[in-house]
Length: 135
Image (cartoon, rainbow, N blue to C red; front, top):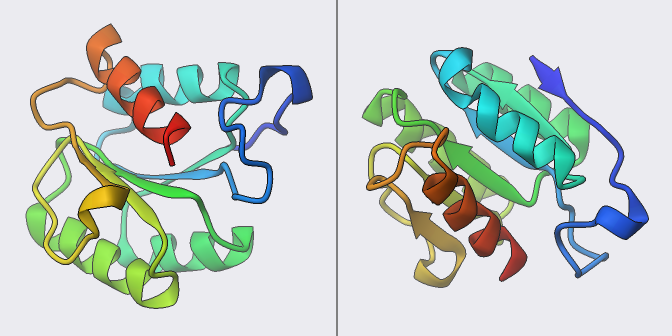
């Protein structure tokens, strides 16, 4: 599943243009993350959605990397950890935000634990956008 949309220069959510603003969403049920995907598109962020480790790796390579991995609340903890570990091995600077299970081995300054929020809520969406803007 892909929701790529080119970033609009006057609507760019991330001010640092040398950083890839693309977001990789790891999810199980796409309906749960649909409002967040729509918000990211409106903010000018490209986003790709995946549901497995092979898809995550292929999409990450195909896009030339992503700025942030976002984990949905319904993702199994083992899968979330496998994907995070695999992608961090390829790009140690990859930021991670999780609405789901906590992830081991992520840099505290480049990780957001958003488990108290639902990704479809205004509070959850706002917390993620603040995190992305501060990268």
